Length: 117
View 1 (cartoon, rainbow, N blue to C red):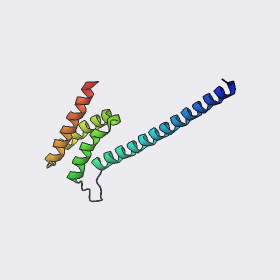
View 2 (tube, helix red, strand yellow; view 1 turned 90 degrees about the horizontal axis):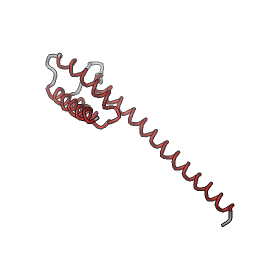
View 3 (cartoon, rainbow, N blue to C red; view 1 turned 45 degrees about the vertical axis):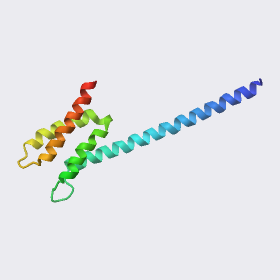
View 4 (spheres, one colour; view 1 turned 180 degrees about the horizontal axis):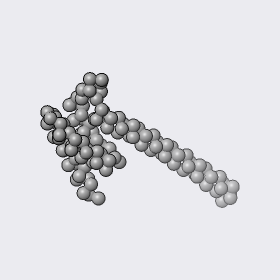
């Protein structure tokens, strides 16, 4: 076999591998950034009133509490945040039981994950 053919084949193969690596690396970074933005948006919507009248929407909050289970990378932070919110929200008179129930379910879910490690 000709050495030039072997060298050019190896160079072509390395170029292909490098291009594929860069593609998947960029895609992973974009995905991580999107996940970061979505997670922080959910946390903000969970704890911050949507309007100037400081009204919170129970259905949205319960949905957000449930959705936090889908952000595995943030489980430790979510767990600490939700435990803190539970302490705070349990002291609020007239707090919606659905929110506290979903909060407890999500904390239990995160505890199971935490205990697997």
